[in-house]
Image (cartoon, rainbow, N blue to C red; front, side):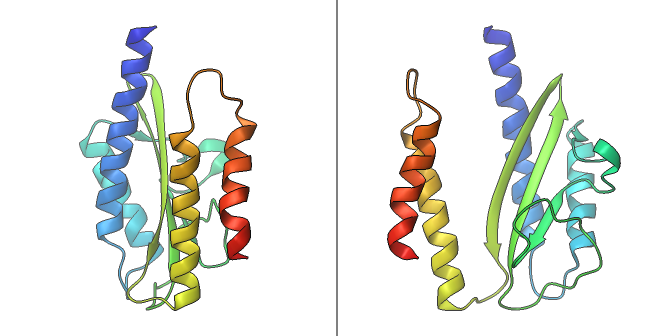
Length: 153
């Protein structure tokens, strides 16, 4: 009902807020462990529990997937360097609901191919989201994404 929808919205807003805080820590010389620490602290300050932490023994509060790691990378001592791409995935539990957000960030300046990859994938996501409404089949999101990314290789 409406209360559940509002609970989900709150959890998602808080997740986005924490994602933005974690993203602000992304720069050359920072470790993925440090980003995890920042995300964990920001989650706790907002009275949230990091959903990944201890889920099937997952040891961290967020996921940091660098370069070729597609998703669910476990934060560790890897030191971010100029030109890396990092996907930061923040999932929080708040008030009985989970919020889950992820975005790709450039570490400093990236090469043209990496910048294009990040932009094309972001644009395809926005196109798919703009098509979401009652009655639209979920698979249509995949069709929209494929249509957008295929010309870019």
